[in-house]
Structure formats: C-alpha cells, structure tokens
Image (cartoon, rainbow, N blue to C red):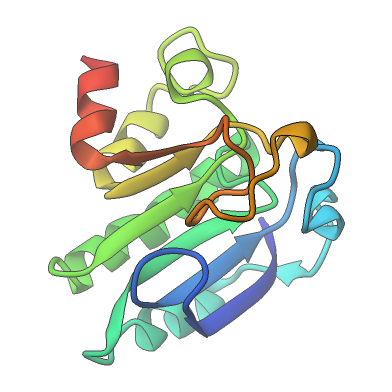
Length: 168
C-alpha cells in the first residue's frame, strides 16, 4: 500500500486534533474529488513499518483525539489488508482514543457480505474498530460547504452504534 501524506495535526478530518493518514488508490473517481492524485495506487510512497511507527507515535500526545484514515480509498481491498495491522496496533495502544474512516463506498451495499469491497477476514474487523465512518461517494451536484466532515449531502456520518445497527 502507498500513502500520500501523514498529517500529524489536523482539525478538519474529524473532531478534535487528529493524526490523519491519506492512503493511495481509489476506484470511485468522484467528479470534483479534492484529492484526485490519490486515485493512483502508486501515488506517494510505500507505507512501511517506519510510517506505521510514525503514525502510532504521532497519536501519543494527550491533545491528539484520534486517528483518521482517508484517501484515496481505505476500503479498496488492497488497502484494507495493509491497514488492518495498523488499526489493530492503534486500538491496542490508545483504547481511549477514537478512529474515524472516510469511504466513498456505501456501508450496507459495499462493505457487507456479498458487497463488492467486502473481505471476510478483514472488513468486519476494520468496521468493529471504527468509531465514526463517513460513507458515500462525493457528489459534486450535492456539494454542501456547511456540512461538518462531509463534502456532499448524500454522505453520512455514522457512529459506531449506527454501524452496528446497519450491520445487524
């Protein structure tokens, strides 16, 4: 997996001050995407143990509320398999901090058994770890700058409880 950027202090990709990881690779290709360069799976640099350590260490300070993973597209199958060890490590290291993920896919259509981005050994474990999921493709015609943490009105801000209800 490649990544485009690790932002050690962000205030725009979730509540509080966060560490943000932008992964590379996305097949959604939303018109008007703010991060088109990350569509390419080869964009940026390889995400190695060095970068994983950087992310974990950046989350250490008390003022960091949590980790946000976006892209590109974290739920592309190539990325899920690589992100799971990082997510597991993060949740063990910081059980009191939260994890936000952004996806252009729709939870109950794409990330469930039979869904086009579902990997039975990986996807459920990732979703169990997520505290807030922003799902749905960016739709330029539904762009709304007044929305918090979303670009278009079709996108949803789902809590862990929302995720569990949808998946039940």
